[in-house]
Image (tube, rainbow over all chains, first blue to last red; front, side, top):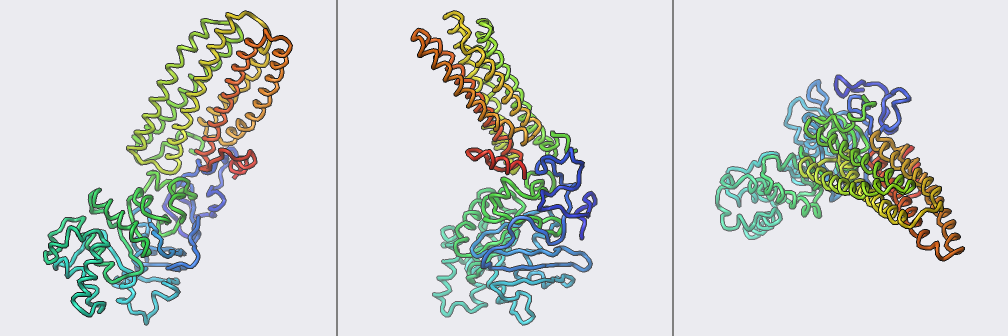
Length: 305
Length: 240
């Protein structure tokens, strides 16, 4: 059992019963309003809400991630549904990005990182030693916090993935993929007349949409987004959010965000992480109106974080 | 700390957000106090034939209306500035709704005051005064308890207000039957009986508004909407 913070005792877990710690009877009446984050204890692997779905895209069970001696993810079990947008929220250092990066093995390059537990994509083990990681990442694409286009032309940025995966046999096929990807990313009108221009000359919002176009050019099934809008202005953010809504028809999207309003706007389900625990998973509408766990409530209402 | 109800809305990182929510709560309770006084004075003016007090109640409704506008504005600004979520969002939304109920209670008080002036010019009889006193004090208690439930965030007290509403409805029906008997006995009683009926109807509506406030308190505290659901359902929500 792990202590959430120095002020939170790690004794008996009362979650699921209203999440109250033992308090004198006369103080016990309205548990929902009276719980304080400090009073809350959390037990490993005990997530409130609905972490599981039928026929999930990702089936993740008892996932544990450590960096050397530090456990970053503590026994998390979660399903991610097909064509759903799920948002991971939580304070800095809660493990949400670490967990996201497990989904396409982006943690592999970190020497001291150890991933335990069962992680399946469409029923297949993601961490199988025989699995081709390049193929995995083609299926599970990623968009990062800062736009990171290659120092190449706009065209070459989008064409890069299809080229190395051999998705196009002719130039015309590649042209189609580039155009389609840019269209889906809402960038075609702005980019069509300057496909040979350097991508690094674009605005931040355009670069981020280019990165999304690059991610979808290899026809992934899942797109992981790690704070995709944190470096963008409100208009570019609105464009990317619109894009997420459109893309959710064809892709499964997992988005890590520090903006609670963004999670509320774009996602179907929201998962709240805290100190390496998965505290609550619920329909987004529930999380932002009547969260079940006092820690979730404290975080989304700006009481700590 | 759980005993200090201000802490429920007062522990944000942003102290200014804390102050805004507390201010909203305080203003709402101020308005509640004003409306309670309006109803109390209206009933008293009627039962004691006090036309001065009745005029005061009529004039006092302006203050109630202004408070409705001010509190709504404050609530809208909080939404615009803070994008409240969860319990904070429920507080702000509930206040917006409950303010409308309080304003309506204020209107009922004004209506009763007008009827008091009318009845005073028509001369004295004792009909209905027992019922008016009885139902009047009953709904005033309900209103007071619903505001108290809000101040203390007490869903159980809110539930008792909801239960009382049934009894007020029954008392109103019984009083209406009595007045109907008077009207059938002598057609000259009709005008006066109708006025008394309208007073009783206004008081019964006050009970309904108190009940709405109570439902909103349960929504605020428990996060579940108990409007248009049975008392058993509301009991289940409060008990969990």
